[in-house]
Length: 323
Image 1 (cartoon, one colour):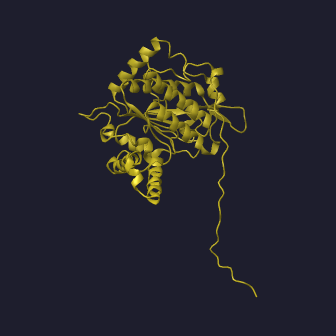
Image 2 (cartoon, rainbow, N blue to C red; image 1 turned 45 degrees about the horizontal axis):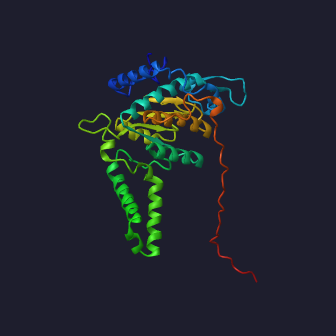
Image 3 (cartoon, rainbow, N blue to C red; image 1 turned 180 degrees about the vertical axis):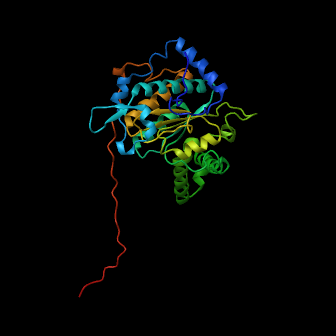
């Protein structure tokens, strides 16, 4: 079965960002899996509709080049929706690409700095289960390209964790323990998901004399517009990028695989990312949860209600007594 490059469209001239050797390996994996009849179904279009993956942004925010992914809709509120047949085709390509990378022992870096707590908790939980790297709060500038500086914070984080687990922790006063715990929480918030990364893991995918086992084989971002800084870092190091994007963007050559869908929906992110995590599980000999499952057995999670924190406003104005 011949695989078409994700962003090689009829009306757009693009250049491949992945080497020909990598595409050949990817083609072999797809041929092997298609022979096992895994290519026929990964997830149904009806389930993508149920997750509201077809909804696009308002017309005034459309990118003209994104019309390739859209089709007409009779609804006045949303005149154009995503063609989910193309979304499913690109999703299948990415599934087998992750499967190929995970079988070689390479890791996947998930990046999602969305404000929704549901997405953050879901990605963190699944990445810990699949032993993947993740960033779910804020992408620090130069996280990959300037890893020498980031690595200093990682060493500090690991040293504090080792100190907390040792008996020397009890030698410090309560005030010192609270101060160090605050440092641990702050570092864990920003670099906890990338703490296992070493310098050899990001030395470049095609660098010579580098052990690529446990290296970053792929970066996946849940929104092309929001995670542009992460994409720039990955492309400088030659790391392939998979990006989800709405109709307000068109990646062109910036990413290797682009999946058009509704990035504002928690259910859409949950469903598509579950396919990615299933690819890692299948490569490690585990059973998938979503892939090739019946629609009735796949239950979309419920949105957690947002808890509004009480904000106390203190006025600095001096009140002068009136006589």
